[in-house]
Length: 304
Image 1: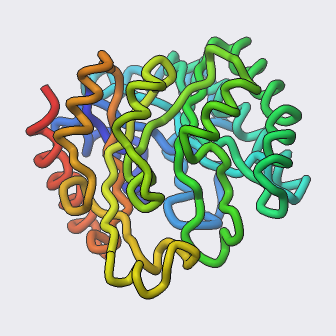
Image 2: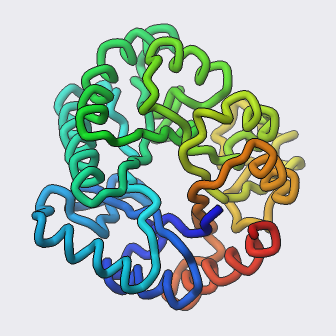
């Protein structure tokens, strides 16, 4: 397995600075954020280390060579929007940019895009499953044409009032994975597996690795700290950030030894990326760099 990080945490770094940072720290790969140019609508979004809309063959060759020279792979191109957004204009904008990310993944030879399945917050789960049938086949057909795989992260995108109710990503549980893979029986569709989201949803994050071993295209390392005293006060119907918070690997409740052991059991030998969303390591470039150094030092003990 190759160890890297999600580039969104280095929002103020240029592409070159981000890759140089990865190389200097001994990371083997990066999952590169490829949002549209412009203002971010939420935390960790809006970061664009590769402008896919303006990607020429000349620029693509430069990016490939820059990574080769520094021995850092691009694990995937990342864009995590809501392509099933209720607002039709926003939905189409997100779909259009996602297709551009798919195109860039083809041109760069990366062949993997990480994203969300999306969700219309005004509709039920059953109604959203019908939307999946409508929205996703053309996206997957485009990915197939470009020989690019799509890995859906299992983050519910339900943290505070702005995502309430329902959240902005339907593909949040093994039960929903089964339904969506039945609707979309496509070899190019798989999972970007993040165990942290199972913790606060109080689901098993080990067993699904075995059940969906053939669908795991990419892996995240992010931890979650569940505050049981707060949970007892507010209950599971509260905003999730009222009783939990994202942490660096090793500072939360995920058992990383068991998790990596299960990955080796199923023969996973792909890219694994640290995702930093720990507010304790924000506020300065030094703290952000420390978050990557500490996370790598911790995960290195598990990954050979």
